Amino acid sequence: MNKIAAVMASGAFALGMASATHAVEGGFSASGNLGVVTDYKFRGISQSDGGAAVQGGVDLDFGNGVYLGTWASQVDFAYGADETDYEQDIYGGYAGEVSDTVSYDVGYIYYAYHGSDWDEDYQEVYGSVSVSDLTLGLAYSDDYWAETGTFYYPYAEYSFALPADLSLDLHLGANMFDDVAFLSDGSDSYIDYSVSVGRDFGGLNLSASLVGTDASEEECWDTDWCEASVIAGATYSW
Image 1 (cartoon, rainbow, N blue to C red):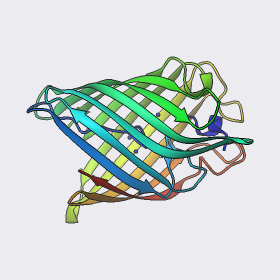
Image 2 (image 1 turned 135 degrees about the vertical axis):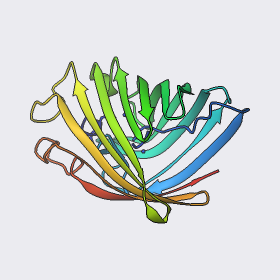
Image 3 (image 1 turned 120 degrees about the horizontal axis):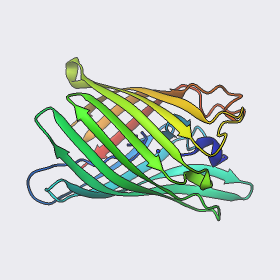
Image 4 (image 1 turned 90 degrees about the vertical axis):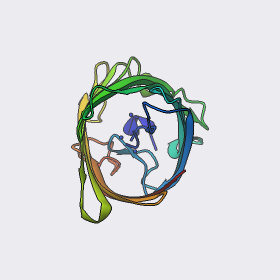
């Protein structure tokens, strides 16, 4: 799989970026998570060549808004005999509240890739503001995956509480490249989206998500990595 086709941000935050659980009051705490998805899609594009991936992470919450964490996932980027096997994200930031309905989150994330000799690592800064169930955010990289240059990712998310303890999460993001014609048709931007339904069973979360982009198979390097697909996931948190 060519990573230029899957250039990284859900899962996650599988926001596809790994997300930490932040508390703004109280003392220090640590948490972890381990899960599996039927396809690891990040910003709408498969990172695992359409296959399943095991994922997991650890988060540290310092009780004053400061958090640190790391998250990893299997990936499948093949370059002939050279292959990237997994991604590791290392992040930290600050989350706070303005009122009972308004909160914010700012931070830094470093994406590291292991298994091949290709230089795929990159960094982003991010920020978001949440008003009730609506979140608006922006991620920025000065030099995106594989030295593809300046990248902007504005996004919007909305969460609904459904009957039977179900949750409905909507996501829409715009992937914008300043320095490259990213898609195979010469386009320098694309839209990704997801619609997810989930339910918690104690520490176990089960989810089903429709994830895709507005890029056609021809624009997506003659692959189905960008096409809409349903992804099932199971994550245990402690």
